[in-house]
Image 1 (tube, one colour):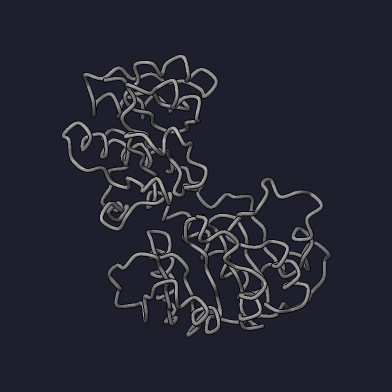
Image 2: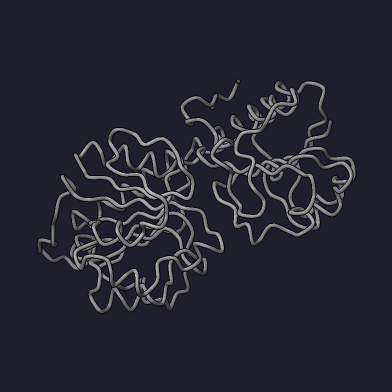
Length: 332
């Protein structure tokens, strides 16, 4: 069995993979060198492209990405119609992404986006402040990230309404867990609308001009999922018109965010550079998750987070368990 790691990982994580599969050949490459290794490769961990998939046809059995989300429309046709299993890392990034979303939420609620401007201008002014206590939180997408975010908001006695395309268990601290048909209801009631769903053809520009008009004028939008879920032009117009109070954005339709985007200079917008998934522990978590799936693969067991390649996300029965159950130690 041959495993290709793209890009290379640090030595301690390489050893973890080798310890998990001692009889495997493990090769580390960069993407521009990967095609040459594909002819006899069984498993890819990390990045892949259509050229790698074509070169690996006949031997390739499984691709484990390190991304929490995958756009089903961008999966190469060769891969979509093959028997190659594809797993994402949904849930592995849940801790840090939910923390980033919560940080953006608190920054908006407590006026930190305004305080930063006042500090830069040496102005002793008080920003517009509110508190999270007893706010209504609307969560669009209730996978690992949405659930972690709900836990954090619940500590402030927030009322939590959640939406998901798949039925799942409703935690006690969540008032309602509905399907996406209740989107308008959730948006109209929420003080914070948090986007945590995958970007699919069904969710492309889900947050559009009509939906923004349905939000409370005092409400905030927080997005750490994918930029394409929000109609950015409509959001900019809505912010200018005062249709919503502000937005905390980590993702954008075009990245890097163009220098001439109005979002940079809006005082009611907090921008971070698609950094929510970053953490010193990130690579340990993703390799730890990969090694757990590798054990399953070698035993012929179902893989965690195997995606439905038509939509780009795992079915409920394949979603990974809570990240706290995953071994993230370097030594295994």
